[in-house]
Image (cartoon, rainbow over all chains, first blue to last red; front, side, top):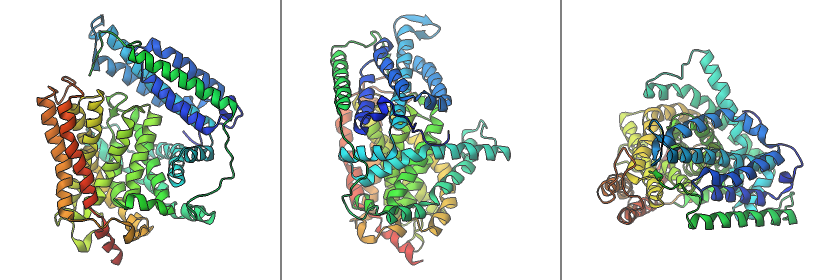
Length: 260
Length: 277
């Protein structure tokens, strides 16, 4: 987990306007939330796979495979316990609870995938400008995009520091939860300090380039919605509208499911 | 609450928002694959030690950082859903309440030693009070919304989030604060060192504000749970009972309003005396 998630490419997804890609990620999440039955998530799954393929973002998903696998496994196990159905499947599990567990697992993977497509195909500066163009103050947009950009760096620091601490004998796998919490301190402090210590230098670098000098600022980067953007947005809006109509008609739900 | 808007004028505060959001988000993601409590909704979150500490050290920048960091964690942890908006607001309060209440903890933090350290027993107690109040405020905001949209029952979620937030903060928080404060102070990155006092809300009747914050957060938690158990037939450690109960929805509104009113009454200006040390 090191470096940037952005993949330098010139794919169709890369060429779309940042606003289109943000809207696409948002609308994908909205559409996913409309359905309970995993079969009804298949169209969205196919579209997400297509986006990942076009963007060449599968390699980034591979980088976070450990988190994906752990979350999928825990989701599959726990949602089977947290929901009930009427058709016995095996042991304490019912068909309905199993289907719902598949749905929730797909939801997790698809939400991560849609975020991954966005950051794999959009440069930081494009993301900021996209956010500003849709009304976010540029200072807030800058903070958000910087946080996104720093994530892999900090993730990498966490792994490096935990390996260094383990090599010095730190055992993070004790059973007592309070003791475990306490042992995370040697991990938290160096990550925090190594991240925060450059704040002043960072601020000086920004201010030397005129950051914050005026309430409104100009941008070197020019963004323009093209025909492809309108077509993609139109398709996504129709897709979400159909999903909402289906949801309102009760289609795509799991009959007999009792969720908490 | 003026400072939560005026802080955006200062480049260093903006950078602190970004850095705290990135740290919080990264640790949340690392532990997403850990021990889930409700998969896709919440999990054991040792990273929740950060917001109260960020709040006390970086003030409004820490609060915004907690809100953005939680959203970033949701995006890359696969838990982005209709609850994420209130999740961000809840996490904002998790960091906002500690720094607003710190100088108005009924004399536990003396005016001549108001630094956000836990170097005395009284200040340690003050930290635990503000962290618990922040944890409960965060919990009732998220649980109220999650229950009203039929996502997770209030009784279960409010207690789970409070315990989840406070467990990390009460054990590791004071140690972390003691380790980090001297460095942050030396680098001149305390929010009271960066912001000017005029940019911070003056507040009114701060002790009363603290009481109202505690009533809003902890009172809302206790009262809301009682209503959820009674009127909605929910259980504390289960998912039984009715969700989206109208009585519970209405009853919680005054408590949530109290959080905002208390936020307006509290200041944070009193912490600026630290500069004279």
